[in-house]
Length: 180
Image 1 (tube, one colour):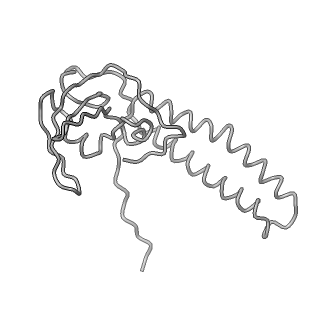
Image 2 (cartoon, helix red, strand yellow):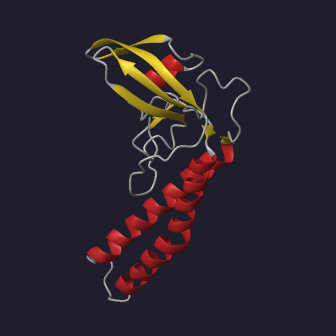
Image 3 (cartoon, helix red, strand yellow):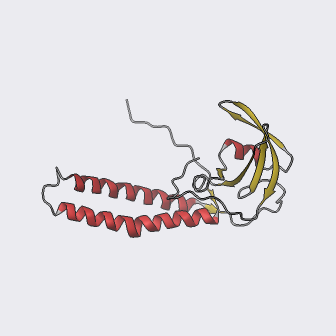
C-alpha cells in the first residue's frame, strides 16, 4: 500500500496587516536569531567527536530541520497571501477584518474579529474566517440571527455590533502557529 495522504484542505489566503507583520517577524526571528544559535550549538556538539551517539548533535540537527521547514512554510504562505488593509465599502455588514459582538441564547455576549487562519491563534478574540461562526456571520448585519452547528447541537447567536475600527486585542504570547 502506498503512502498516499489526502490533500490538506486549502486554507484562506487572506491576512490582516498585523498578521502579516507578525508572520514576517517570526520568519526573521527564526532565520536571524534561532537558526544561527542552533547552528553554533550543532557545530560545538560536532567538535566533541563521535556524532552517531552524540545526543546534542542529533537533537540540534533535528532542530535545524524543524526551523528550516517552518521558515519554508511561512515564506510560501506569505508569498500567496492577500493583505486586506482597508475596510469594505459597506461597513454595516461583517466581512474580513470586522470586529463584531454576538449574544447567545443564554445572554452571554462575546467579541470577535474575523481574521485569516494563520493569525486566528494570535489573540483571544481572533476568529478564523474558516471557522463555523465566522462563516455564519459573514455578510450579516446587526440584529441578524445566525445558527451554528456544533457537536453539542445547534446554537443561536444574535449579532449585536459591528466595527472596523481597530480595538485592542488580548494577545497570546509566542509565535503564531496557524490553524483554524
